[in-house]
Image (cartoon, helix red, strand yellow):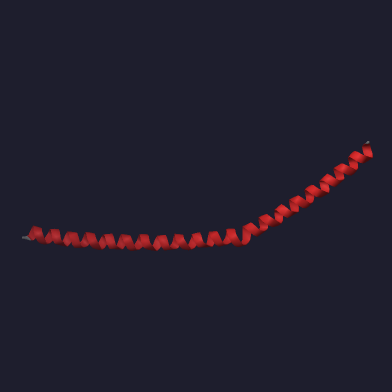
Length: 77
């Protein structure tokens, strides 16, 4: 009979331990979700607009460079 009681106590302890592990995992998943949301907000609100600004700047520099090359080619010919 003592072995049955010990077995039952071990089962209860095991279930409690599993619940604690599950709670810890759920908390960590919640923290990861918050970090992921922060990363997505940064990508959408900060990095994308800055990339578009940089792209337009590069286009501007390319156009100025092409004009300089055209003037240089005309002058040298």
